[in-house]
Image (cartoon, rainbow, N blue to C red; front, side):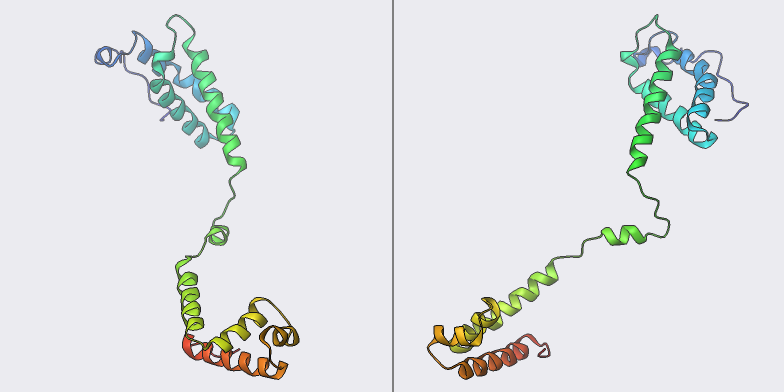
Length: 181
C-alpha cells in the first residue's frame, strides 16, 4: 500500500447489503497504518509486512461474521496478523531455497511405465525359451543356487546346467534386443 493512501470518508454505503456491520469497513481502513507498523516490527521487512497486512485484511473480511461488534477491532486484527505471521514462519521452516531447481530435480520420480514394459518383455522372452533352459536359468539366477545344487534338482551334470544357462542367456539377449552381459 502506498504511504500517501488514505481511507475514503466512508466505505459503508454499498456494504450493508453484503452483511457488513456498521463501521466494520471503516474500522478496517482506519486500522491499516497501525497494522502496518505492527507488521514491520514482526517481519523486519517492509515488503513482507505489506503482504502480512494484506493477508490480514483478507482474512478479517472473510471472517467478518465472527467479529463481535463493540469489541476492539484493532486488537482483533492484530491477533489475526500475528497468527498469519507465525503460520508463515512455521511454513517457511519446511521450505528449502532452490534457485537453480537442482533440489527439486532430485525429488522427481521417474515414470514407471518403462520398467513395466521392460519387465513384460523379459517375461515374454522367458516364456519363449525351451523348458530345460528356462528351468536351469531360473534356478541359477532366480533362486541363486550353485551349478551343483541346480544339477541335483534337474537330475543332470553341472556342465549341462552351465551349458543350458549360457544358451538361455544368449537367447534372452536376442529376444529382448539387448547385448548379452
